[in-house]
Image: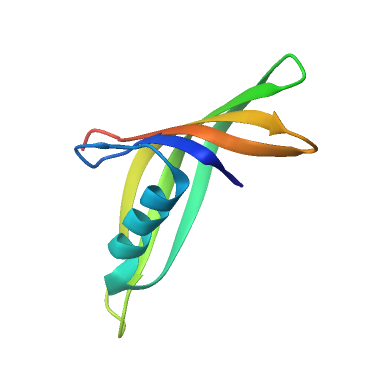
Length: 101
C-alpha cells in the first residue's frame, strides 16, 4: 500500500511528491490500456530494525491495448522503501528506472 506521504522517482522528467499526484499519473498513463500486469524477478528484501525495509528487483510491466493488439512490455528496475505505519507497512519512497535496450 502507498503511504499518503509518498515520494516517487519514475521515468517521467519530474518527481512525484505525494500519493495523489502519482496515482493521477498512473491513471493518465493507463488511459489507452485495457489492462496491465507488473511482475518482479530476482527480488531482494531487507529489513532495517522493526520499522523500515527495502525491496529491490527487476520488473516487467506489460500493458494490453484497448480493443486487442499486441501487448507492450517495458523492463526495468524498481526500489521501494517501506515504513511501518501503526500495524501496516506502507511504501514511502519508490524509484523506477528502465533497463538499457
